[in-house]
Length: 67
Image (cartoon, rainbow, N blue to C red; front, side, top):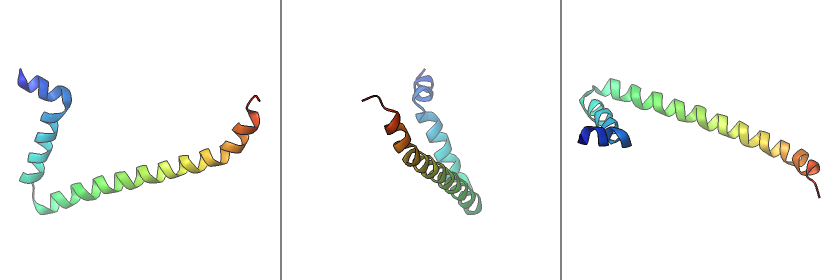
């Protein structure tokens, strides 16, 4: 029953991932870190593009606002 509670909040999953990382070789660990880092860099790039788009749209949206 406690496993279900752990699964519901993701704690059990985090523990399994953490243990898998501790059990893996340094090469596999480096690959995991590299993969996660590249995913975050990709997300940062997307976020930056979204922010740029919003900044360009802001004047247009302001001009369309009802006074």
